Image 1 (spheres, rainbow, N blue to C red):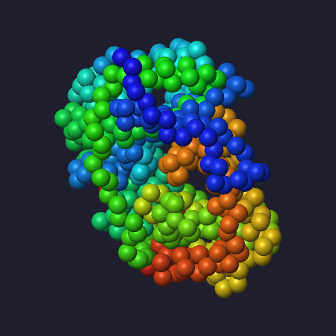
Image 2 (image 1 turned 135 degrees about the horizontal axis):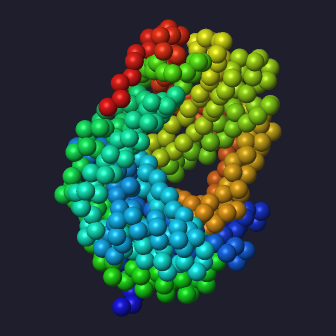
Image 3 (image 1 turned 60 degrees about the horizontal axis):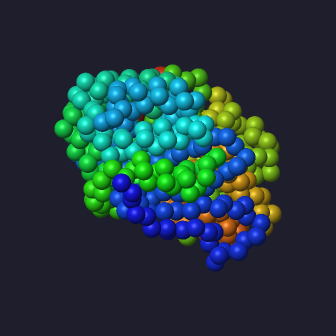
Length: 451
């Protein structure tokens, strides 16, 4: 049976002629079962990278399902109608391929790389679990993966600094916010996820219309599209996924938490809620992070290390998600009190918020941002991820000129403005991480309990 297709995008966006941006040449096609397919051939490699993204993450979990989006990621390897239990990994590995997957608050993504002659096998494996996972799963598989996930959670939490990210989620987002419960979930909900709930979760979220398939590497695009059409021809169109939770920004609130851990030094996390992915302030916040932390000559790096050696380790980053992002500064020291470190960091942020950085500082930050994007186009697997991100952001897989223009349009005043708007103490949540029995947390910090 042949699936009809509609071509969605075939060339780069002509409206953004940024000549010095690296070009991609992907096409996007919509199969009539709702699956979006993005293809970009690369002759310089013998490998193929295949990504499939489902628009489902921990934010889509109902009461009683916390942690089940991640659990479901594991279950997608446990057998489907035409693929026996454990065969997915065995067959792909035997063909010279490898695979992985990850779950976040907003998405679940499955990745493969394999020799070009294994394309049919890879497409069969993906199509079978997209269309017919419910026919291959049983309670024994579910029980097995529940044990795996709970052990993964226990091992991660027992590791030094293994609870910090999840503690920040609990502190930063209000209890009513869809990002409040960590992606790993709760022991009670993961333990209670039975086969009927598995099939219901799959039927609600694992729909062709809720997925995007990206293929990058050594293939003929016309032939590859025929192969994809063949293998996904019997995957039925099961309609659209239900509307997603769309709360944009949590109410401004602050919390001060602490964790005692099996560590020898002290760490402080300073965190602020920012903007949703696609916001006009997103690029300015990204560049602010590199104005503050980008090596010798940047604000926080000089203040805590190069000019005044206060810290052993540090990090500044800005991350956006579908609903809201976060800006985080993390500093670790074995000698300097956390309160002192926090004051130094906040002083540097306040300086930027009061007086715009120089044009040279912004140009350096812009170059850093663009270098990361250029690097992401080198290997087929990284390139596939970039095309997928372009599609999500712009509904255009060839978005690199638009991405460059987005950062090129940020001024020094924009960087100052977002520092003054978002990175203020009244919006700041903190997490102190100290050795067991140590009293060096920030004043007022309360222990964080993870579910």
